[in-house]
Every structure is written in structure tokens, then in C-alpha cells.
Length: 443
Image (cartoon, helix red, strand yellow):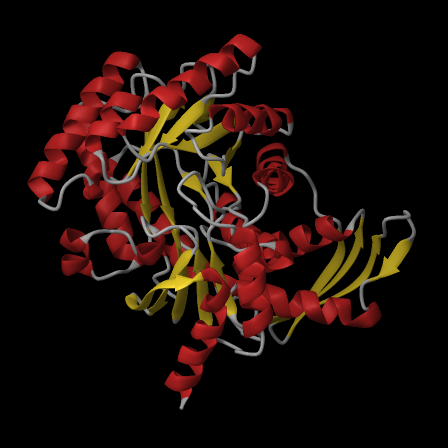
């Protein structure tokens, strides 16, 4: 199957792997969102997602869409919808694609299905594509009562909505099953792909590790999860979700697209596996390329337990173009630790879940994440989430031991597992209160 967007972009059917990202501006700030879309398109984004929190934001994205077209910026726009079927139906008349979780349209599953059928009818009329996007931790009671909060539940839920699309003879559909846990994410996509094969209809897949964090960790984690699927021919669009300026996601996403779509080779020189340990020699053109190549070369093997460890050596080109010894200063050891943590084989530090931020984020997410990391770096193996909003943050930090969730208006909620234990905490006190709670719990 392939999806043809109104502006001529094709997704699926073994073609080019499309690079996507998302604005983190407020949609009501039309000037800022137009400017960011312009920047992202110039940097290589082929598809840009924009949150549409409510009906009152539909005219804003309509104006953004119109202004970009007038400027000659023809990047297709994806409207990101949470919960509101009415908003999804209205915005589908404006954009090229709508991202929804149909199970959130109504607490009653039969009514949710009816609202989704309404959306399909509008999308058919306006030639608008749909992305059915189900994230680990936000599946809804109907499906988790049947299958738990599991990769199987994610795949089963997606397949039910896809069957409704098939019953309505609507195939302009992409589907995603994201998780911040690389094992969960890869398993869910593999199960769904098998289900689609059995059904005889393989819809295009949008792949990504959601809430991957930032820096080296976010890049390595994203490459481990995404490459494990792309290397098996699973995936047609990619999003690298970093808690950074969204333009910083694009070099990693473009690398993945080129490696698995166009055949970009790794910088690995040689590799030998002895006693389930891979010994790899690299000659890499840059530091970032080294960590991406390493993650893609061995991520799937670690996830699938074909090997237990990786030892890397060789060189990469420094900023001045001169070769740098990978082993110098313990850099190789650091990369090995990061890789094994991303593949969830060995934890040498806390595991962080952090969303990239979007138009629903009401505080400085990047700054808060850095503060939380700095104060919790000693908590080896603990899973800590830093989320941008209370709309979907609590649901999507399903694996977290503790959660730090922005409420807006300078306030934060703190969660233990998925239960709020403190609300409306001033931001300048929130990290202290989080550490107090962790200490009390440990005692």
C-alpha cells in the first residue's frame, strides 16, 4: 500500500523513507509557527506535524497552511489531535494529514468507532490522509482490559482501527505504535506487521522512539529502535523525537532515511564476534556519525539478544578534521554503555523519558529536563520522565518510576508511576520535591 498526500508526497510501497518532525511553537502564534515550518522545510523536513489542541486552533493552522503555500513552502502539514473528534473532523478539511488515536474519541468504544467513521468520511471527501497513532501508555481502558498495557495490546488496537478503515474502503492511512522503551516499540511494530501480512493489506508505517530524550542518549536510543525496524523493511516515515530544537532532529532522521532508503554505508571497517561480544573497528567522518553507525550496526543484534556486548575501537574525524582515537579518555567505554542502555541490556545511569515538546507545552521543557538530569544522575537504573503537558504526558510515561509533568502557569505535577502524588508545585521547588519523594520512598 502507499499513501499519496495532496501536495504530491508519497508514503510507502517500498519507496523513499520520508523524514518528519514536529513544531514546538504554540499554534495560536501563527507568525512563530510559520517561521518554524519554513526553517524545518529548509533543513530537510518532508512532513511537519503541528498540534491542534482545540477547535479554536483550527483557523490558526488554516492560516499557517495558507501563508506557507503563498510563500512557496509546500511541505505537507499534519494536524496532531488529542481526544476531540470534532477538532479532527474540522481540521481534516484544511491539512494534508491528521494524526489521531481513535480510541480517545469517546470513553464508550462503540461511540469512538462511530466518530472515527465520521472522520473517515470527511477525509475521503477532502483527500486527507490519516495517521492512526497509538502510543504505549495511552491505549485506553477498552484494549488494556483485554490485553494489558503490552506490545500485543498496541498492535491489536491498531489492527482494529485498520479493519474499520478496510470496511469503509479507505486506505489513505499510515499507522504508528510508539514507545520510549525500544524493546516495547520494536515488538509492537513487528506484531502489527505480521497481523497486516495475515490480513493481506500492509499499510505504511511511521516509526519512532517517542520521548527519547536529548543529546547522545536520545540519538543512540532513536537509532537503536528505528534501525531495528528499518533494517527489516518495516517503516516508511521516521521521526526522531528529541527534547531539543526540532531542527536538531533532522540530521538523525535524514541519516536513517538515507541509510535504509538509499543505501548509505556504515563507517565500520571490520567486525568480529567472539563469545557473543562484537569487536568493531571504525574509521568515521565525525563523532555524530560514529554514534549513529554504531547504534544501527548493533542495536537490533542487542535487542534480539544475538550478542551481549559491543567493544569499539578506531578513529573519528574531530572538528579540525584530524583523527581522534575512539578509546581516548574513555569515550569508547561511554558509547558502549550508552548503546547497551538504549537496547535495555545494561543500565549504567538513570533511564530518562522526555517528550520533545509541542504547542501544548506551557513551560521551558528543555531547561527543566536538564535540571532534573543534573540532580538525579546518581540514581542508576531508575526511570524518570519529564513531560511537557498533562494532556498526554501521564499516559505516555508508562515505564517511568517517577514523572515530572508541566501543568503550565509555573506549576508542576509529580507522579509516582502513573499516580499524581503532588500537584501545583512551583517550578523553582519541583526538583527538590521530586528528590525528597524519591528519598522518602527509598527509606
